[in-house]
Image (tube, rainbow, N blue to C red; front, side, top):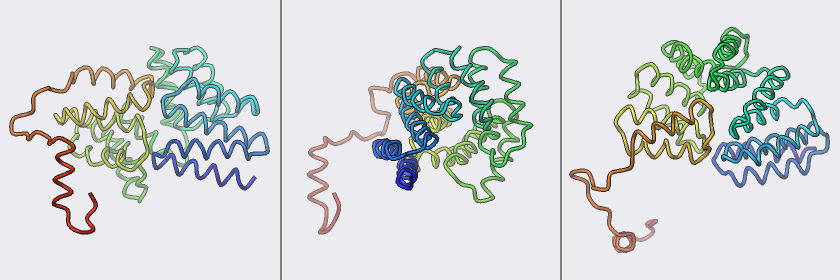
Length: 290
């Protein structure tokens, strides 16, 4: 159904801009307009992804379940249900669904994500097997998952080379910017990393992983306030965004502690909102936006 396709594309565009309510509404329209089971399952799986990304694993489970009720081996919904189950602590079900998802649709990003779940469970041999499968596979487009694999589970310096080449080819998506920034950070080059992780988080997409990466880079650079803000943002967007990295974000935030009550030396106090607005309005010229 052409209308379903159009609304699905709109949902993706809204999501990438950070317009979550609009994305959800468009994805609901796509599900309602879809006619074939496969098309409806894809739309329901997308709804599950949107719920997951905003930190609502129970709602995500319902949506993935509805998709899998229509198409039993729908790969994206099996993967989505796996990550939602893991977020809810139902790790046996998560492992089972990851196996089914990888049998049906062995995407590079799924191999990395499933491997990180295994690693978080102490199942290191199974994690290494999935990482090796990702590392040695023949993929059309897998620079981001391969770069993140190298940064976190391999050779960060080699990951930097890989991702810089991708960037030089003109592939400058937020995903590549985030992965390159993270690889630079993991290779001990936090100052260079900052430009890229900022770019990833400033483009509109609300990603808990991107916020976590930026927070860790800022923490390494001694930027305590921004680091605290971005680590907290990652956990606010989705408290269980990664079985490996979400606990690390929480630990890093605890390590930073509460913001100081006293102003740093030399800092100016902020004017009361009412007074500030009055002063701005008084000094604004004709046609000036206030």
